[in-house]
Length: 318
Ligand code: AVI
Image (tube, helix red, strand yellow):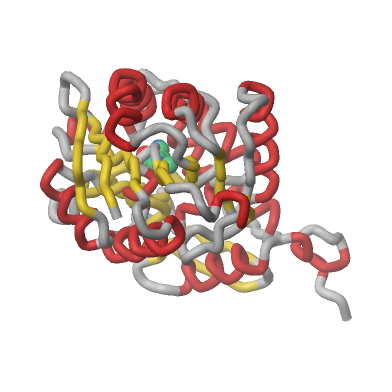
């Protein structure tokens, strides 16, 4: 007999990797689900809202740094490079670089074809004379770039401190994969959020308006929607803690009472106070960032920060 979730056609639409990560993540101890699953349509909308929150300093701080340093970056790297962005271009940061770097081409790489196509369309309207070659791929592995940019020197662009969402080991692997993808003579412009006082960091991930809480809790809603779950979302609360030992903000979903639920037909139980670890956001001091870059096969050549030293932008060469 068909399982009910297949009959109603919902769970059959779920990404098998999402199903596998959720089921294994809830079964292991400590419970953990990878942060990449935050970003369904609703999660992406909530993340956009987070970037505008008064407590969430990274986006506006990095944007201001990029505006200030852009012409200096162009002087250092030279005009006419192909800009290769790891992730779909953002509506604010990418245009800053494309305006001043005078690139020969723009190559955004993203695993989500939908985001990639949408953001490339928006950028193509703003930069009609710039050749764009979107690549739908997982940039955690080395990628063969389009033949059209084979002969151009590359400038990799990885803003947003997205590297902080990986463990240092994964981050090193990613930097090595980027180096392999970009080839000899490449340069990399990368943003990394800095270590700072916990009373600045924690509110950035636990804002007064509750947007980050909604972002975190949406993961449970997504599980219910896509994996035929019956997780009692109201019995969970968002938790953001600074782990000083590992220099990272951790986000968790904490059960506020004993709960039993099913996901994909499998039973799970959590006691009051148990958590599901949903995200790490590692922070790097300037020295840490340089060490990370070197471990990933890059030589740091310049670095910039804002007047309050909240965020770092680094230029490195292969
Ligand atoms: C995408 N990433 C860099 C964000 C961060 O700051 O780690 C994700 C985020 N999670 C909660 N707020 C923002």
